Length: 339
Image (tube, rainbow, N blue to C red; front, top):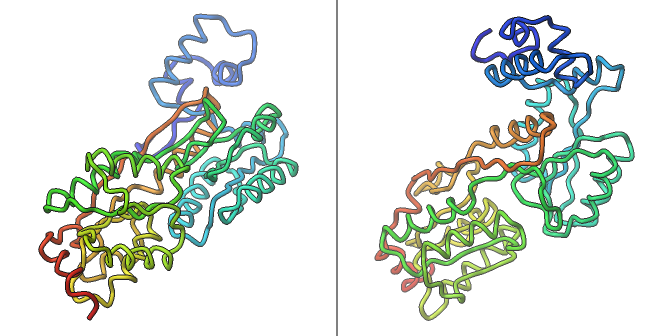
């Protein structure tokens, strides 16, 4: 077995010194296996890192092929497109299919998509939850729906399985990086802080700064054009910000749009990498993470079938130039205005 191959039940049987049928009975929780044999098999499972292939198990029992529902905010966004590709790739390893749905920031459409998928036989769900409450999911979860949440914690559903980014660390890293260049008036261009991911990124920003000027905090920015408008407004303040932290890639693009005609630019760091971020001059410094790992972990957690748990995917700061501009340069941009 190579390092890239998943361990099989045959590998577990060889490691434990038992028959394949015994391993199958233990994995499928069938009776007629003695306690000592169960312990030997479980020790081999733990040692090899074996995970039951839920899709193959379903087919062996004569059930339909496993279909995973993936419900996201907007698949046209680069983050969600990459997440969908990662989930589809990981699901293919389990011989499972993936069906997609986007709710376009509308909680009522999110609920409609989930309920419609469940009614059509989709009993395994990966969901990027909206800012709305999710207590309505309790009935579906009690009725056989298995769900793993990605990127955000759902409101009103305690003890849910979730794969999250280390959002708090990312917000703190970005802000501390700007502060290390002398910036203290750092504006926050933020999405809906009712979303756990955005809330934690903003919390990291606040902890790093210590004292926050609330006039420099903008919330509820979903689109680049709105972010650009807010940046223009902030730079017209009597005491404007010298740097910006954007909590998502759309806000970062909006900052670029607002600054494109200014002779000198404030510093800024974005959360989420995006296409061509390294092509601009200066390149856009971002908090980055492995989207493929995010999607793969969600699929594995969904199919493991164990108790609810939370997994955090690490983040890193990628330095490209925009976050390294000093205060003197960015402050002059506010004084000199547009070119």
